[in-house]
Amino acid sequence: MDYQAIYQQKLRSPDQAVLVVKDGDWVDYSQTCSFPQALDAALARRSGELKDVKVRNAISMQPVQVVENDPNGAFTYNLWHCSGIDRKYIDQHRAYHMPMLFRHCGSYYSKGYAPVDVAMITVSPMDSYGNFSFGLTNCCTQEMLDAAKYIIVEVNPGMPTIAGTAHDHIHIRDVDCVVECDLPIATVKNPTATDIDRKIASYIFPAITSGCTLQLGIGGIPNSIGSMIAESDVKDLGMHTELMSDGYLDLYMAGKITNRYKKLNRGKGVFSICNGSRALYDFLDHNNEILSAPMAYVNNPATIRELDDFISINGCIAVDLYGQVSSESAGTRQISGTGGQLDFITGAMEAPHGRAFLAMHATYTDRSGQLHSNILPRYSDGDIITTPRTQAPNIVTEYGVATLPGKATWQRAEELINIAHPDFRDELIKAAEEQKIWRQSNKR
Image (cartoon, rainbow, N blue to C red; front, top):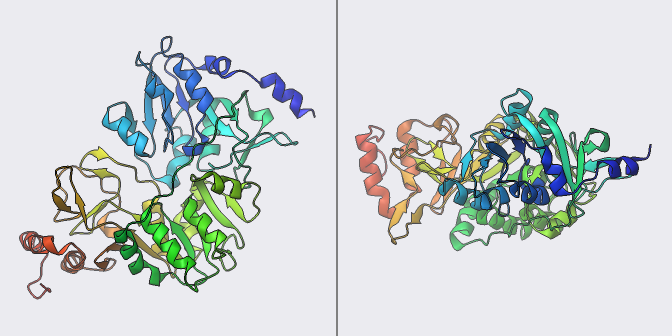
């Protein structure tokens, strides 16, 4: 079959392609690096002729044109998970958050909760067999495409080709329309670690042993852990993560990740979405040591438990004295999203030798220069609880580790106050006494 001929038959300009969008449609951009830059700009140019078009995405990595250039209010932007750009849009009441668990994200599409009239995603160039790789975003792409009434692929030579455990490509026969784009795939700068990040990392690092499998979030703390691993005699680590970032690239280049002893997908590092540097994208292109996989597989606690010696390390914003964790909002202000945090905490607890850590700075300083504790007596300002107290794992600050599983309320209060900033400990003890979760014999 002449796949190139079919390709040419379906090839359109971005402006021609988006004419399929009608009033009231749901348009899906998939997530993160699948963002269709040329199609987004073309759709924004129709602002004056469309109304009530809902656009769905997650983790925007560049300005979104249906938000930035919509003088007529034609588009409503909806987000499964938020980046810094998305946070700004929500603050400005130009976007809305969609609460979810990453492991269930595909089910929202397959069960009809998230309708899709038009899907627009960035893919790698077509191979000789008619296939386009999903590249950096496996996630729930297949479920989203299965739900779509019309599919447009934006072919970008900068999207790497990455093999997957499943749902890693789409064939030209299943595509309704093709557009081409040579704009650079968006990248993310690797955050710089602070002295506090390095101190926190030093408390977590002893849990990492040769042969274990790692799930790392992004930020200065995971980067600090990566640096410690690179300088240590720890070796033969495995990778199983929802998000692959440059922290993993550094570990691969240092020879620390081999996936040699993984109990599942042995010899293969597994991720579901990826964003980072261009060097990371180039490293992944046609790399047989790494597989993408659907979020329903990667984040499934039943999958994670099979990895046995599994270590999950993520960040959080605040925790109260009961062990309730907020990792996605400050009061009612949306910061990020639940994502996969609860998925991996659950999976790590079910893994025979699994452990999960949530890390944060003990304090933050507001715009007026006033210091505040990130360990709170209780939540009262509408903060979103990401991890309930029944699943709270090890909480880490620059003052130590609070191990919460199996602990009574008075034990939790004591452990958490011990890792709070010293300036706030007395008032936290007073609050714990008022809340009747402070035992008289507790340490002071």
